[in-house]
Length: 320
Ligand code: 1CP
Image 1 (spheres, rainbow, N blue to C red):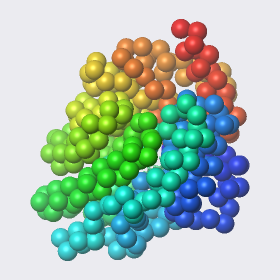
Image 2 (image 1 turned 45 degrees about the vertical axis):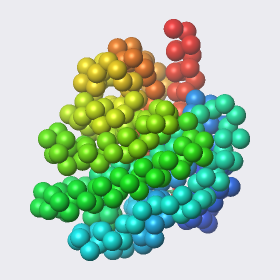
Image 3 (image 1 turned 90 degrees about the horizontal axis):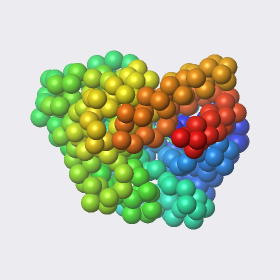
């Protein structure tokens, strides 16, 4: 799961002295960091080390990832004139991604590599707010106040995101995940009207490759059905909705991903096992299940707790 690396001493060691975005542009570092959780925990898939703002940096936006804060944009996008700064992404803009995935697929052997991108809404939130936001007020002001500019902004972001996912698939990614981390801030009708068309455009653009497409969100219980409809093969669920209920909302034709609360990993091992078993039992109703946390690994998580969780999930599912 995202930012799994942050909990690992070997991650902090290789990152020492190198800024986050600079690390994302160095194929040697990307390869090493992507492999670290696979080596240590024996997970069934690797998630490509990058960040959702990498393609925006690659088209020339002035942004940075500030330690302890997250992505920060120097000049936020708020007017029609600002849209001109969102030019299309060309594969050459991210040649380091192609190079890193080439190295990785060699090193990973048969372990699948999951590529990813930020979804248009979540990217728009960073761009419009200028950084992380609790209430997304400027973003919503634009969405409600100038629906045409909003639609054009999301459409441009959809094209950039689709191009970024295509690069990753063509380089060898075996699945892709669209992260709409903050879309749970919206009501279903607003999602359907103002966000779903752009996310659907991204899923459509990569449908012909036939790789599984995962759609991830947080606090999206009321949006699960629509997130599936947008074109996903797998819908991510956080810990607020049991997977059996999520299957009812998403439909029996889609797999689910999730949904252990990452904070559970701070509890004693017996409690972690009991909660993980609940997830596995609840998932039996779904036609497919990717066991995962409901959101990213928290930075202070004890790495051994994760290793033990992976072992437990393997033992439990192999015995079935
Ligand atoms: O495990 C991994 O390292 C996978 C790579 C990965 C992924 C999939 C990173 C590295 N970031 C992401 C996705 C990402 N980035 C999302 C979508 C998924 C999610 O909801 O977590 C989001 C919203 C971001 C934005 C972001 N980047 C934040 C969140 C800030 C906020 O708005 O609350 C943060 C803290 C970052 C920085 C970042 N990205 C990745 C890492 C390892 C870090 C920490 C930086 C560091 O180690 O110095």
